Every structure is written in C-alpha cells, then in structure tokens.
Length: 209
Image (cartoon, rainbow, N blue to C red; front, top):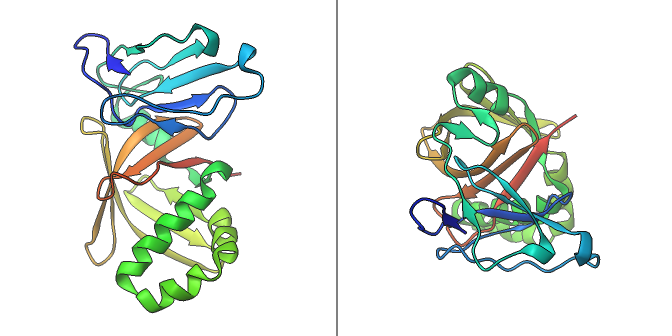
C-alpha cells in the first residue's frame, strides 16, 4: 500500500476481506499477508487508512501495488470537524469477536509490568480472562471522559483525539498517558494500535448494543 501522490508506503494500513471483522495490517514497507478465504472468486479486499479514501478491490483483480488517495481532514467517510469526531467516537464500544484474544493478551502483557504475580495467576486462566474481555465496555463521553466497564468493576480517565497525528491518548487519574494510533475510525469500527508496542497486533472495537 502506498500514497497515490507520493508513492510512500503506508504502514499499519488495515486489510480485511469484505464482510469479515478480522484482518491484518501492512508492515513498514506497506506489504501485507492475509490467508485467502475458501470462496476466493467472490472475495473482495477492503483497504483502510486513517485520512485516506478506503478501497474495495476484488481479490482476483488485486495488483502488486494498491494506491490510496489522501483526503485532507477526513476520517473514514466523514469530514473532520470537532462535531463529527465526537459523533464517531462518542458511544459505547466493545471488543470485536475477532480481537478478543489479542486484547486479552495485551492486557496480560501490561499487567506483567505492573504486577507480575497477578499476571502469572491470570496467565493460567486465559479462558476466564478472554470471557471477561468479551464483556468489557469502553464509553467515550462528550466531556472528555472515558469509562471502562468490566463486570462489577470499572474505571475512568480522560481521552484526547488528534486527527492530524492519528492518535488517541487515554489518560489515567494518576496522569499515566497511554498513546494509541488510530488505524481506522468509522461509524461501525474502531481500530487501535499501541504506539509503545509497534509489534503488537491491532485491537478492533465495534459499537456495543
């Protein structure tokens, strides 16, 4: 994947088959690998990158280079204004089914740094951790507050979105700043990548009921 105007690679481009939530993302050179579905003849690939026009390409017509056109001040299909940003993000999100194992693993890795003993106990109960992750809810509020609901427990912090830098900051009550790259943000999909851990997989969220 490259920028249509400059030819520069677009790392962290989201690539998935149309109709499927899961997928992959491109590497630093803009390249990707994705296992083909059983019905390749009718399959279509969706390419999404924040600030660029998404493309849908039939798998059998896929060429060696995919060029995405930049759309200044746009996220997904929505023109960027402070109001439209809030309309996209201000809702209750849940972890997409395809990303539950990934999010649970990331949470465990983060816990390992803060509390190795507790992390080791949870590592032996991955099934439980994934079940809890499936029930988690993240709510972004208009006053800049983000709330995380996890069964009977919960927490809150602040959020800041910078569309120009494609970044989302989650700030804890203690002032800890968790910086995320916004890979994709549309009405029905939020894809985040941990800036501090570039080798980690993307986390995919969808609107909760």
